[in-house]
Length: 386
Image (cartoon, rainbow, N blue to C red):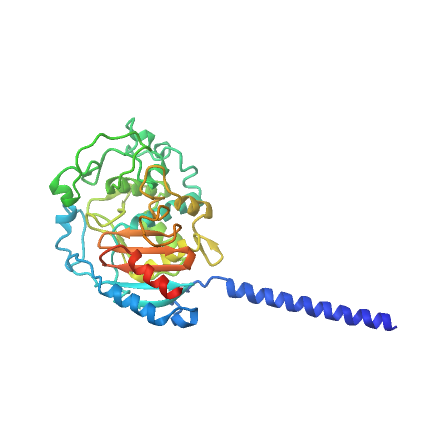
């Protein structure tokens, strides 16, 4: 009897120990699970709650506020810098503003982060995200496949353009040749391209040369429209922005002449920037959600919006680019974002408008209409973490 009682006591102790271990494991898992902000709300925490130095973070934000960019408030410098407009631009922009997201929580904001402004070439990283959705849904089955094998609108009929693959477009190594909405791929002509005019050069074999080129990106965007048989902004809204809880204030605005026929209807093809007007107009909070999606490897809650393998490939440097992935700027060489970890990456648009992501610090920083490299602000924020 004593032996049986002893065994029962031992069994109870083991059971209690197991329950305690399970409870601790559940608690640790809950503590480690990333926070995902619901629509319309981003939980804020004080820097001290997350182990940051409040004074140093305040100093970093104060410094950022002194770094207002020199772009004209009324966009009156737009055509001088970029050339003839094809679409609209606002008549006023916000002052420098931004948001700091640490460990999933908003720890700082400054300026007016609710102002929906053009974000210029940050839209390229958004096009990359749409391409990731196309891979997820089987609209693009192989990024190394020539685009012209499935997109039959005449844009890939020439011997040169027949060689262009989806990956070449994503890495800006396509050397696609042609005219998109009145702008020629070679960027020659002061009136058409303003200060962005390029010197004549020999075109290289597709896939062997990097060139930052909005005409080719606009061709890529049109090809995504053809692949989905749906306007790119609709895909971005339904498959990305709505699932991550973004506001309804952003707009992806086309050029006046960038409407194409799709299944008997006129639909707009959008650009990968605001170089010639139009483009993505969005507020800093929505940009932060977009950056946070990429910080979390393309996942939002329990939904893998962008395939993990695609995210990994997108953040891998191309062979010929200057630390460039799939329309994302990378920091593998440490030159793009001096002083930040090599795995940091960022979306960057004229102005300057930037989303900087540093996985090592679990950090997303949106900073808009600023002068200088975004790393200078992010380094100051990291100093507050340390």
